[in-house]
Amino acid sequence: MLDTGPGQSEIIRQPPGGGIVIKSPTADDDGIYQCFARNDLGTAVTITTKVRRAGLDIVDFLFHQLKRSQIFRI
Image (cartoon, rainbow, N blue to C red; front, side, top):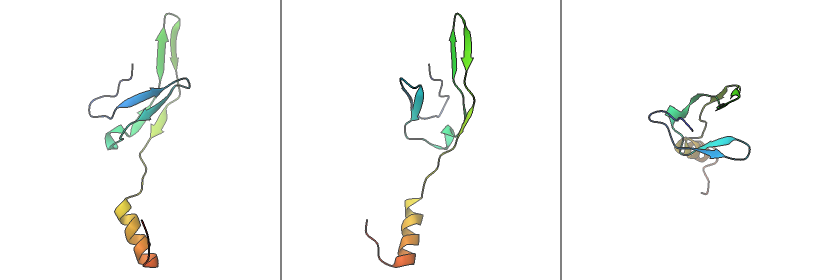
């Protein structure tokens, strides 16, 4: 079970390694992630991982490219 919480994006499991993919991430998806696995023998817990979106604002990028070279192609 993947508990994504309210307002968070769809999260897809990626077997066999146990990774996840966050489709269309938003600021609501930023935070601390941790995996818990439970069965009759007990609970296994991973270390926590801090996730923060990163990206480049395309408008800002194109403005700086144009300003720097005055010529660019898309």
